[in-house]
Amino acid sequence: MPDAVVIGAGPNGLVAANLLVDAGWTVEVLEAQKEPGGAVRSDRGVHPDYISDVFSAFYPLAAASPVIARLDLAAEGLLWSHAPRVLAHPLLDGRCAVLERRVQDTSAGLADFAATDADAWESMYRTWRRIGPDLVQALFTPFPPVRAGLRLAAKLRATGGLRLARNLTLPVRRLGEEEFAGEGGRLLLTGNALHADLAPEAAGSGGFGWLMSMLGQSHGFPVPAGGSGALTAALVSRFRRRGGVLRCGERVASVVVRGGTAVGVRTAGGETVDARRAVLADTSAPALYRDLVGEEHLPSRLVRDLERFHWDFATFKVDWALSGPVPWTARGAVGAGTVHLADGVDGLTRFAAQLATGRVPDEPFALFGQMTTADPRRSPAGTESAWAYTHLPQRITADAGPDGITGRWDAGEQEAMADRIEAQVERYAPGFRTLIRARRILAPATLQALDENVHNGAINNGTTALHQQAIFRPTPGTGRPETPVKGLYLASAAAHPGGGVHGAPGANAARAALRRHGLHALFHRAQRV
Image (cartoon, rainbow, N blue to C red):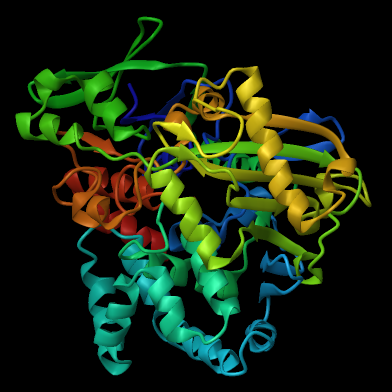
């Protein structure tokens, strides 16, 4: 009988499992899919000569995460690779806002939009350098972040903390207008905010856009050399080398609860796997509470709160094998790992408004990844392994475009949506379509079939909006991984601090389980040695 059973071998489940075996626990991880990784997987499914990331691709949060750093995955063979440029947002007139590897280069480029914006960007980055490490530590620890929060508060008092706090609560459109005279800096902030399901006019979107922009400036948007699956492989290797057990193709059907305590799980095949100390679930909150636990074991208030659980937007993704580099009109986009495609901040607002009203956007904001640019191992020399994704409403009411897309996602609708994304790329890179050797379409339902946590393509396991963050995540409560069932912990991105590959929800759940058994302090000292 293992000390702990972890449901799901996504990055959070694997981080939790690694921390538990580090503390001397025996751990068994059960994964429904035939391979581990959740939304961190790569394959050669588009073309045999090209490595494609199936879900996530760039990992600034992993690069900054103290949780990931402590695991020392380099010892398991993990290498990070960077594109020459971090991120670009081209405009149709040939101008381009570029987040460069060096802050001086980013600033110089923004000065082409407005001379004063070079100083504005460097001032913003100086603030980040002062408080960024403590802010990241505070974000990635259980709520409330007492120690990191106190350090952060002290630094905020010394750096005009109330004004910074105000900036972080602003809509990103307003933050960009207050900080930058030209469009370049505004584009970088706003495009980064829309990596989540935050509209340019949403409260708090300024804070998210600022965080992602500053992470890109300080850490870049790195990729695992050889494909995102290399990150999963390193986590699995570390776990198994320390004696952990991983079983794939084993779907958990229910959590076994006796006397209000989780004592194990039951698989779809009828096997009961007992857990001596804890069950940790790297699953969505609705799936854990409704499907695996059952309402009879839960407080009625939690059951009612689940009715208000807010998913983030759906996602539609296309992968390509290209015969050559993307022919960007804006030279600044050449060499950028990530490229944002939208017609300025107004185009991003228009896109977000269509999503808010349930319409499929006619000119979708596309996040475009140039993976061979970021990692030459991904495809033959002179070619490009590329992808783009866009967001869609969870419930489609109409199509703002000409194709009548309804959300059935039959073959015709998938092809029409993929063509629409390609048309958006073609606007900024004429001739793009002539380079396509092969493509793969991943509609919302397809993404969910590959990873059940990605509900209808909701890649953040719940909205990033303020009403479902911190003490409100996943429902109003403590913002901690403990659940109403003793010994059961929510270890997925549905828990604080939410989406992104940084391992914090898994780490928080593991530490909560250790704390319950009086082992947290001992483990914490071992981690610092």
